[in-house]
Length: 105
Image (cartoon, rainbow, N blue to C red; front, side, top):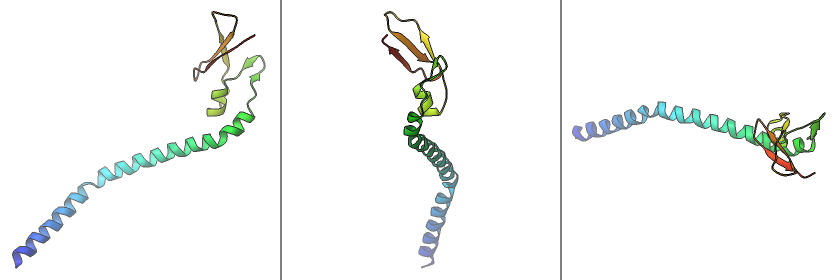
């Protein structure tokens, strides 16, 4: 009967060794999840702020038009730069986010 006790005890020890060997990998996964959660919370905060930011969008500062994407998404003032156009439309591009739009005169 001591044979079965030894066998079961060894199985318990082997299982404990296996599970213990997973601790560092599980800790790494938890750290990745914590970072992912932090990023999601940041995006959620931006999303909650979006309508307020859009309502406060100044369109221009002086003679410069401001990028609406940078303003609403990142709370940044980035000027839209005029770029040459093939037609009569004015084309503007943001150098930060590469937003581009054209305005018909």
